[in-house]
Each structure stands twice: as structure tokens, then as C-alpha cells.
Image (tube, rainbow, N blue to C red; front, side, top):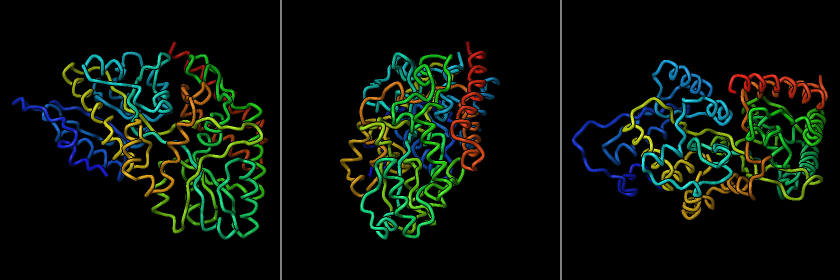
Length: 433
């Protein structure tokens, strides 16, 4: 595996000493724990590779806290050069007129070589404008996959993981018949069971190409396909095939404890499962409705990207551009991908990781990449660009919990979520016209 401490020698970014103090570049991020330590290591590798700029990473809390801090800092004219923003904040960042410095403009105006075609289209599409220009730099991207307990599968005589939702039901029932308490659970229910379900089946989550076409978008995830899926999950919640465990990754213990034999979660959750699971597990692609489609579309991403903020000196932006160029190099991206479990954002990083034998040695880690790159993204599978989406997700979670508790039908819950969510979309539209 590539060692970042050797970055200076391998990448060759050395810049002749100028005799002046290095220009500081401040980077606010939301990576805690081991990932935060890795962020510090990446910054140090860049700093050690040249002496013109010093990138200073600053941990600002979770995604919401980091974004909120950056907005407040910008208003106070104390903003960082770079801020990490989760994918659901994309529309808000794009609408912050005068606050962001689009990455494609930054790289061009700083004279940095920058080829967007080298990035995975399913990743960059999420962070690009209607002309395909990248507005932010993808950093930690993930997509949901299906984890399954191979030991429980073997005991029940099941050889392969389910590929369709129809098989999810039959496989889960067979597991229940063999003493397993629940067939599957899910993390991030809005992201996995509605947003990615819609993309996978090429049905709109919202109008105007899921928000990419303009601010006058309306939510449409209460369509027949989504309602039928949630209605089925409601039935499964009652008979044990499905067991709800929480809005984020709160359901992970159900999988770790072997209460549930399958778990849908982020591809970046691989390391956590490897650490906590005391059984042999596998990774498979998300299931699709075999009765509805013969070939599923790509899934969409989660994670975050790096946004450059306006208000700094021109020479400082040259350092920002140099750092982003460093970040996108195959060696750096491959190392980050292999360490964190997040997807490689460039084809070169993916090819390097594959060539190093990482996927062969860590079976299942390639699943997310293959699922994300299956075919050309459509307007329904390119991603989502919706204002106030953090709050909209909260509404979806609340309404789905009413379904799992048997208090609401799927149709009533999704209709109400759409109605309440559209109020927030109109509020965002008025504020950003």
C-alpha cells in the first residue's frame, strides 16, 4: 500500500525553497477518530512535499456542525479556505452566492492541470453544475451496499446473497425458519430505502431531475414504486423479516450481535463491521425489484466534498489549488480509499488499488465501486440537489417511523412527507431566487 510519508519522494511535488515563510491554508473538516488522524497525515504529506504552503486541518465536529461553523465564519469574515460539506448540503452551498469559489474556476485560474474526465462520473455528477463543471472537490464518497452473515447463511443452507427484493423475502424467511431473529435491518433509511431505491429503479425522487434542473423542484417519492416498497417493508417489520434499528447507523448492533443476518449500510462501514463482527461476512450489491426492472441503475453517493470559500488572497488560492491537485493524485486517493473504506474518486486510484491486489485481499471492498459505475447515470440516478434537505430527511425519518410502528400506511406517510418537504423546498426557493 502507498505510504503517505513517502509522498514527497514518490509524487515529486518538491518546490524550490523561496526563503519566505510558508502561506497557511486552513481546512475545516468533519473527520473524527482514525479518519481525522488520516486527514492530518494527508496534510502533513503535502506540507512535507513543498515549502510554499502549509495546510492546517481543523476538526469542527460533525457534518452539520462543520457546515454551520463555516457559514458563521464567512459572515464574520473569518472563513477557512476549504470546508468539508456533506452531500445533502450541496444545494445550500451552490446557492451561497459570492461565498464559494468553484473548483473548476479555481484550478483554471491558478494554472493547475485539472482533467475532470479522470474522476468517476457517478461521483462528480453530484457536485457539478448543469454544464458538467465541478463546483467542489469530491473527497470522501460512499454508497450503500448489503452486508450479510456468511455463517448464518451456511447454517440455513443458503449459498448466495439475494440480488432482488423478492429473494430478500424468501432468503429472510428461510433464515427465520432456521432460528435467526430477523432477516435484515438498515441504516440511513431515507438514503438507502428511498433515495437509492429510487435511483436503482430509475424513478424520480423529485421533479426537475431530482433538483438539478432548478429550484422549483417538487418531491415525488410518494410514487407507486416507492409506496409499494415501503408497504412491503412495513409488512416485513411486523413478521420479523425486517427490523428497524434507528435513523443513522444505530441498527449496526443488530448485525454485529447476529440478531439480523443482513444489514444495508454505507460502503464506508466496511472497516467498522470488520472490527466488530465475530463472524465471516460478505458484501453484495443492493437488491432491486426483479418484477419491475431487469437491470438496476447505479446507486448514488453519500459522504462529503471540499468547497473552497471566497475572501482570501490570490496567492493563497494558488496553494489551495496545489493542495487539491495533490489530493486527487492516484497514490493519495488510493491510500485514503484503502484506509477509510470510502470510494476512490478517480479511475486512476481505482486501477491502482486493483493492481495492488487490495480487492483480492479484502473481498467485498470493490462492491460499492462496481455498483456506482454500473452504466451511465440517468437524471434519476445522478443524485439529489435539494434545498433544506437535512430537514427533509428528518421529516422522512419521522414519517417512516410511523409506518414501522403500524400507525400509518406507506401511502399516507409518504404523502405527508412529500407535503411537509415541499413546504421546505418552497422556503428555500424563495430565499435563493
